[in-house]
Amino acid sequence: MTTVGIIAPRAVTQIAEGHGVDYAEPTIVGNVVLIGEDGVLRLNPEFEGEQYPSFAILLPGDVRVSDPTFDFQRVREYFTQVFDVLAGVAEPGAKIVFGSGGARRIPDGVDRDAAERRFAESLVAARDAAAAHGLRVMLEPLHRGETNLIHTLGEAADFLDAYGIDGVPLVADLFHIEVEGESLSTVTEHIDRIGHAHIADAGRLWLGSGDGSWREFVATLRAAGFTGPVSLECNWGEDVQAEVAASIAALRALP
Image (cartoon, rainbow, N blue to C red; front, side, top):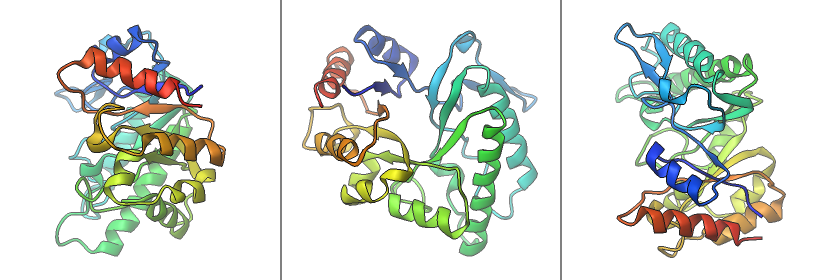
């Protein structure tokens, strides 16, 4: 039976808990971690005393990790602070999803090669700052509508290899896979590098609402040997109770 998580606002997470979801995957920016007027990152008091196995949305858009003209010391300081905070509410070995499309977008007019080198440096800095607390950064490909750097599992693997970056697993997110038209065979091809998974129906809606390949996605993951959890990342509609309950039940029913 699939271990099911959810990425959602706190109110929706509480609904999911009532329907037996296994874990929440809270977002970091503006949620778990707040930025004070003094620029210092602090834990949101609402999360004190809690622990989570994974987190999403690592960076605000103004920490430009693919801009070689941006002060890299600010990037390092952000990672140092954010993982210091997260360590207090993270389970041992917790997964930190590095998506953050706005932060990693290459600005217009910037040399592409220089921008990619800077992103590689930023990714290594995030990996190492997280590892200092026993946490694991994972790279999530995002469709080209959200960013202009690393859109598919294949591109992510090639990028990591090109820059010799190890210790950074990939996140297989079905929504981005479908938008980019990436074959599910790529999931099988890169299964040894996949450390986490996000799922939704077509259009990032709740499971069972459309004609997305979410059943095939889970079957592909399992057949290839992935035994980890799967996080729901959906845009919920008017009947949140019913949609959340149906999505959790749908995943539970899969082998």
